[in-house]
Image 1: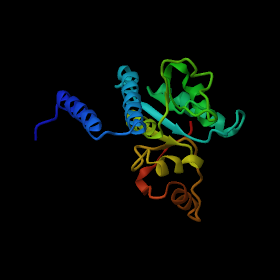
Image 2: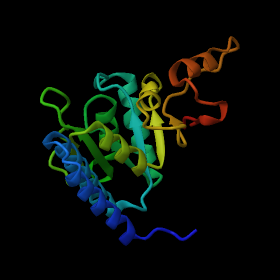
Image 3: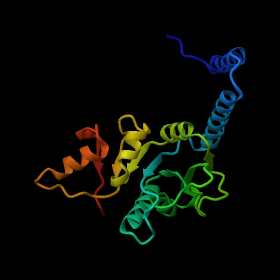
Length: 210
């Protein structure tokens, strides 16, 4: 089967736009289509210079405060993962996201923020950074997040987020930033099933602490 070319895909995009016009799509629908395509284009352009750099996406609660042991753990995790050549992609908010931004540093961080009038604002670490990408639509943000990272690092209490939101279809090379004791009573297995639902036994790789 012949591989599709860039020119053919561009032709498909142009045809779809023409079909929207022929369908007499509403202004509201056209705004969504135009906005989503614009966000994807801007995201692709932002990532292009870093396409061959490995990236990790940490997930976790935005409500974890500085000084919390989990905050310090996330910061240390990001610092170490950067030492291994990774960049970090977060939602550019507070809590675990801010901790990972601090650990990775501004130069090794991306931010994929969501634009809501009363929701999270980008932290000062990422503010005015050219690698900060504010999104309006959740679905374009999730797709950008999913396709741009090479590893997924869910903080254990936030593990349902990637599973339930569809960010990860099965989990792609997940790594856990916090150790959980393996007890005889099978609590680890129960915790895994509770947190990540359909994740299989081979889906986790445990990182030993130094």
